[in-house]
Length: 607
Image 1 (cartoon, rainbow, N blue to C red):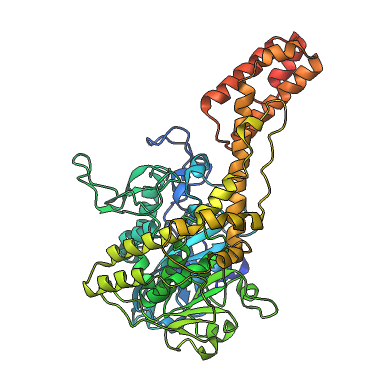
Image 2: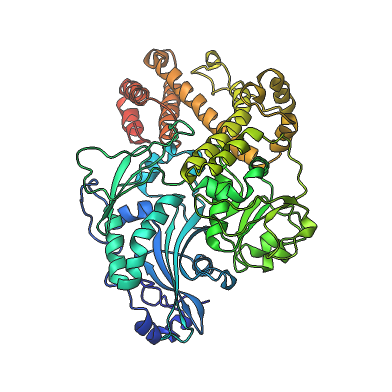
């Protein structure tokens, strides 16, 4: 593996290895044509608003685009990083190199698309585009993944007798912080085939198109032109009703140029992925919900990445808080951490294709072995649950290898419904809608009692005093919660019988509960802070200052200013008129003070 001539690495940044292959690079991998817009370029106004720097629009969607090729002497090599000023650490570049090619045993001839996910290097400043920062709070929690990069790959391998190796092998890779799997795969389908014919000038033009896109603001329907194609998409928001896809419809006017309409930006074909194992869908839902260590062994990165993403998606709208890797290789920087036998397997879902993992991960408690995913309309033979000792190689028969005993009884109704759909040749999209609704109802039946109990931990509004700190949430007591299940448990909304109590006890010890509860606790604490601000605004603060000393008044002003800064910094759910009212209170109090104090306080903080 090598990192060859990174376009835009900058003068003096090349290592000895880069310099050694510089001449070869000029012949085989021409540098990107002066795409070299740097962050210092002039500001421009292209209709998205004034003051946007060159590449700000691009950065809202993508971190960079990489071209990864194969060198006989050096192995996989990053040939181009674009735009030229994009920053990746050596560790990130190495991960991209190895994750952008299928394992040699996969035998992927022709064009292959898949997805990978890797940790951003520690020390990297996680800062989304300014517009994304502003709207990030409106994204569904399961689409917030700021500590990771996603890689969307279009890999081409075709016979070429003019090359020593006998094959042309190259990947076009989009690196983004956005988990919009379906959207970016669609983008690659539009641009990758032509890129392989026209090379870097075409890539530069495509990136310039992306730079002119509006920001991916949650709730907005966007028209995104790229290389002569216009895509119409809608970005999800946390206010969308779970289980409903906001279908983007063609309108009579203005949509004559639309080429592609995407009903979703992030969802995968759920039924196609679960098809080989749909008899065990409910058991797999439990394993994902509980954050159990899970390996998907597949013949190619396409199958492994789609299946891992489908598993993570099956507990939506609950976020999967543990790590997951749609495609994982022996070269991954976390390989040792995730395959060690000195401790229990971590809470992670791995998608693998290398036969080596059958031996390395055979101590893992739950393994899904799948064959080639069939096209819509076909259905493979249903695999059985098998004992782990029967898994010896990656060539073992497809199946779910586990000794796990589900807490809930299997729902035979959904199985009959899906089987009937197969017999009637119901389209895969329709089957996916049925399966997604089933998973949603299951997840909601499970989570509603928890939501109801956590809501009861919130102090009463009448206990909020403007002159005291906001009250604290009551503590979450597992046994107290368990007692609520008798009357308000999942039996109110779900027909499924079984050991729900056991499932909850297990869940309360899982990373998914920990992540979910921390998120809810933060939301509720912010709500208390917002209510406290509103209570302050309803007080006659000027009258209060007349009854107190100057020192106490100055202290109040400073505290109120801090409240304003906190509300802005933490994006507290405060009404705009509340903030304005508080600023008016602060100004009135300052103007009532002596002039020397007015000058000092007006310069302190923001009013």
